Image (cartoon, rainbow, N blue to C red):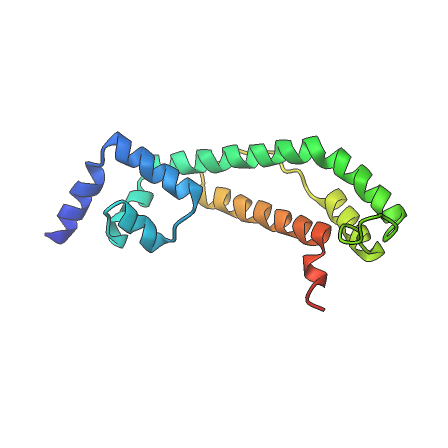
Length: 157
């Protein structure tokens, strides 16, 4: 009987509540427990909600849009970033502000990573798993660029 109540509650969610939940999921500021609590749902209800095709389709579309925005930003600023990195790589450590100067190795890594970064074109896929895999790959590429640009991987030793 509990199962039918769960299904009814999930299916009878108002458009306003659904939109609020989608916005909350997309903003990714809560863990799953917090997300369920914030929307007065049990974990089972939350799992059932995300299993619904219309919710997956909506969130996949939002991920696609975020990927496209990221690609546009990379395309727009890639040339500027490469020019700046070349300038820094040409004279590492000679900049006036020692906090902002980078080592030859950091500049080299940043240039290589930036030039190797694959600007994948967005592909609308009916497969939500493929979209999630693409999102993970994009996040890994961004993290790699961040590490190279700011030398985070070198800070440990």
